Length: 191
Image (cartoon, rainbow, N blue to C red; front, side, top):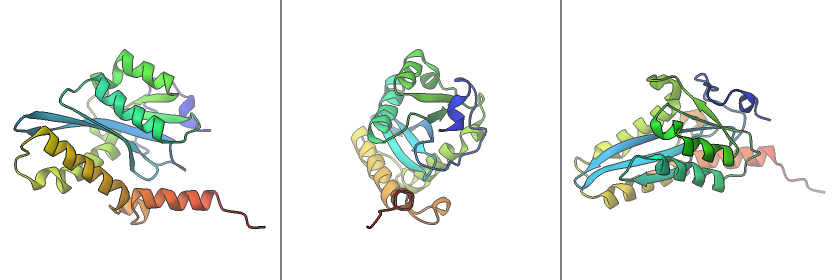
């Protein structure tokens, strides 16, 4: 059982400790925006702190509760969990809305909110956005269309999970780190 899941719903349950002993214990989420000639693209990602895996993503030209709910829904439906997952975010309107809170309750996710205006309370997520900014977004001076940018972001997220190595995971990709953890945690018994 996840000890973080037994605390108050509106508290900061993470306290800047972005490590866990297994997958799906602590998820972080946030929204970033980037311009194109057609207008802004908003991207919401859900990051599993264990291997830094991007487990949910959503894109829109509107920054609203539906954007963040789609990303968390994708994470919820794509991962096997025991119901003891903490969902940590900032105090953005999307994450404090009644609709989002109801979705978290329905999906058995425990809400955790960092303090207002303090980027360090979601530092692992901010680091993730910094990598995307440096490795993808800053490489092209102007993105022409929403489709072009969303396609590039999706491709980078696939690369990030499957191939990008991290010092945090012993220079393995998030996907490879989780596979190794699953192999070690669930050894096959030969008789």
